[in-house]
Length: 139
Image (cartoon, rainbow, N blue to C red):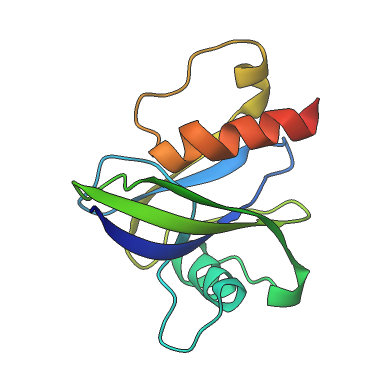
C-alpha cells in the first residue's frame, strides 16, 4: 500500500481569472498553495493558515468553500498519495511567495479552454482532478 499524506489546499484567482499555482523550494512541480494540517487543526483552518504563510493571502476560514476531496499521486514524493481537501476562495487576489515557496505562477484557464496544452510541470492533483472540475464549472 502506498504512503498517504493528508493536505489542505486552496484555489485562488486573480482579476484575470487565472488560477494561482506555487512551486516549493527544492521541487519542480507547481501545485496549489496549501499543506499539512497541524495536530488538532481542521482542513479549512489548515487551508487558511497555509494560504497566508505561503503567499500572503489572508482569508477568513468561514469564507472558504469546499470544492472537494481527492486522492492523487504526490507531486514531489515517490510512491506516495496525497489526500487533498480543496477549497476555493471567492474574490480576486494578489500573491507573493513567502515561507517555502520559491515561485508563483498564475495559470490561464482560458488558454486551457482554447485547447492550449497544459504546462508539463503541474502536480497530478491539478491535472487529474482540479482542472477538469474547474472546466466543468465554467461550462
